Length: 217
Image (cartoon, rainbow, N blue to C red; front, side):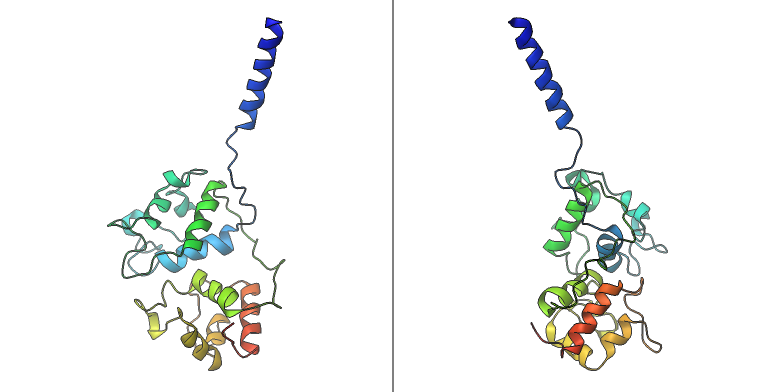
């Protein structure tokens, strides 16, 4: 009887050990580094004098996966320097004022990406599941702008005199054709985002919204 009890304890111990491997609580399989994580850093952290490939403030280049990974502990967001500074509200806060902090959605996305092992997924944009039939300003268009543009085009730092954090300003640029021209990198306009063209799904979604009259929906 004692042998049987001991055997059962050993079995359950083995099962418990194997089930507690370093599997992340969040699988992150739907998070794409190339189209969702990298744009956050390019938009908010790599402007002139900051963590770009030229200035490399504090020795950091956050324009590449390798550079970002230096400040991350895979599966451990709370022990990752990047997560620490984007959630800091003191002197170490990043992006530093007067730049706006990352949104709650962006912070959560980075948290989940690190928790899932910070995979370097590329070529995994949202094109395959691209929904261009239910495009709204409040969710679709605003989400794209926050992800790729508002780090430079906000009320505090209006690069080029352009603000993309409120509907009226975005509507004006949509109506006069400027928004479409810059995101499609047309000649005579500054290509936006400067780090590279938006994925085709985002471009088609914005096009659909503009063609509907750029409503505040």
